[in-house]
Image (tube, rainbow, N blue to C red):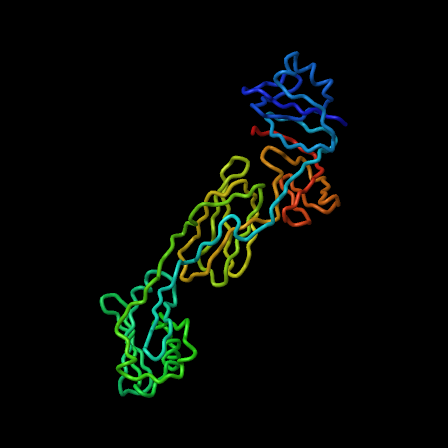
Length: 354
């Protein structure tokens, strides 16, 4: 069956005459279920000057947004989606840590060294102080006090007996309320070095570099070229809580709460034309991050409506299985996006202005 494409070529809205309905905005278009030879006389004598009116075949792509409600031709139209970029894990937003950074201190004893790091991220790590002193006592002894709201670790070692390795082990063995610091980097070549006072003593020094982040992902965001669902990649030990994404779909604002599962990629259910913001529920206690990427579910475009679930999909000239949802106006191809162009045979309807 042949149908007719009608496109407004003017800079002002054009009302379709009876028996058609709808207003075509400048550049707007619609499909009418009659041949152009039938449609043109009904549009009036000036139609050929203000409107583009031409036959379209069932194999021609329908892609021009239109205005007004109308029924697509009985024969399905071929819709081209793509090329669609490969789905990614960071293509919408690179990453946001549960918390920005842990405070650190290079504990340089002269004969050895180790990086001591706050166990949890955040500015509170900058309020941890360490002092190291050798004496005649036995082994390595660590005491924590809280002068003026700070966390002071006084570390005593047995001069001429304790080694850098036993010092590191004692710090890592802290437990309970004292488990505020740990050795994250040790110089393996000096762990057997014996510590001797006063040359290996270390004056009271604060850890530095701990920082907090807020709960909002900093912009900018990169919206999908084609409407798509989202995938959030949560790193192991991520503890920043659920992520709420805000953006638009068919011109309307929408949100989606993605439930965080540490160490897992969580696939969102909604399809997005634009993504404008995201916020996590909490400031976490570590640096494990979450990123936002795109998924496999695709939208045919604003203003193009899939009116039923009957469809065939061709990729590189080969037909393949496809899941079509008229409810969400989406398709899920078998071939995952990878700069892929999809050609979908389905009944279509257009109702939105560009």
